[in-house]
Length: 263
Image 1: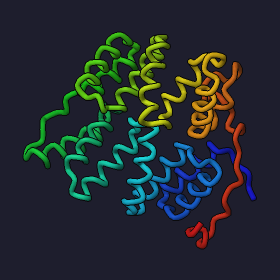
Image 2: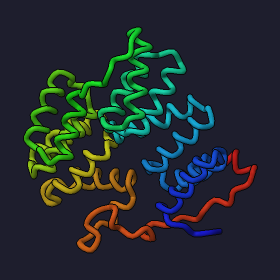
Image 3: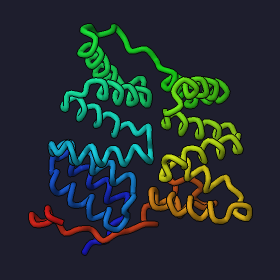
Image 4: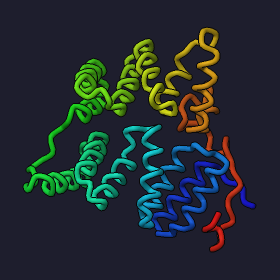
């Protein structure tokens, strides 16, 4: 059996999806999830494969799991928009596409899709899609305009207290502004509703003092490593996940054949 790094395996599965080798991609995703049952990157690929394979019910289930951990996940929101429109739930389709737009406000394909959905809902397409507070806050963060981003997010959350995607972005913005106490407060609030929120667990793991919160630290660290296994190998030599060598995590690759569809 071939041993492969987890990252390389995910890239290989993505190529299978691009080649419409969808049953094969699904089998490989399920194989990885049998070893890493909460790995977000693999769940995202599984959702894509199910959607491309016209298994909308399965795709929706997987995308919703991803969104419980990464509530602003672009692929999951775009995928859920397609699914909800096909179900005839236009309001939900618009909502999900709006959230995809907020994540990538200058994505021309998403703008076109969102205008089309608005036209289908309202009877007329708008000439352009206006920036929402969420989209504006993300642009502020990417431009390192931290104070403006925090202000925009606080205002949006005050109007929409159930927007956990915006609360998650607020924790990230606080972290970028070195406002660790505020980041921890919001992260703690998020975890009460979504215990496997990736960003909230990352903030708690990296920001809490181990000697003051040993039990909470242990719980959040375990969740973080389950969602994003390479996080466990961050060090002074590899200070970010992207710098952790691919070979840090390996897995035996599934030997695909037609019977593997029932894996």
